Image (tube, rainbow, N blue to C red):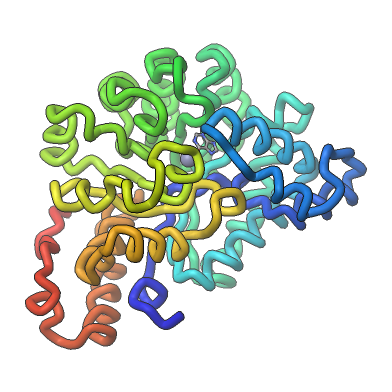
Length: 354
Ligand code: HPA
Ligand code: ZN
């Protein structure tokens, strides 16, 4: 397709590396590592992708992770994702990974991080994609376990740009992870992000901001339930990394037409679109964009705004943001004609504030 979204550059800020594990890869890695699985073919595995909610998805997602054992597995998975992302116009990725999922199976944290980092090392040259890694703690484990994980990651901190919080949200508030986030920020100088307001209440978004020092909220769509929170997010331009196909597949919204993305954009929130677990939820970044463009009737101006927002929210220097946004402008003019802003009735901000 030669649509606007496919011609624009994008930053992918909400993708779980383990969520890019495509079914054929699960089978290949299982074979080479002699791991036995409950599924005998990629088709049988994909037929099991009928999730009723987040926990239902996570049960399968963690089960499939059992095939990731060696440094080569983590390298190959990362390289395969980057090759695919390049085709979808991704220029910068901040990738989540879940070391605790692998450590509980006896895989060393060094194996995980070294494998991922070795694929990222050649990414800019090979794929034209700059990369950063965000290590996530599983919120359905304890804060003490998260602290142990962070301490064991100490030799590998130079490979990381931030920490995050993911897994089953309901009943697992950010407040449990205050100490580990403080250590990550203050002792290791890492950025902080957190999943909040996906399935859990908007109160968890407040907690992520106020208790964990989260600079971005992953998902955050349930902010709409709290007008004061929405006003705070707008005033401080706190980014929300929204994953529409994920939200629909996990029942957060009944269908794409019911998604709140265009409402969030119209309210002036700093939202961007991402893919979460693309191997499981029906597509990568461009698939998510096309879904919202069709399902919500987003305008070209809104698509351009989403591209700009993806770089504005990234943990990259201001000069890089400006370069990416200048390229967005060039592509928009080429695709839509000079003066497209006036014709498109754009609401884009000419002063993005950095
Ligand atoms: N939500 C929370 N945790 C996750 C997800 C998700 O969609 N994917 C992987 N870990
Ligand atoms: Zn996620």
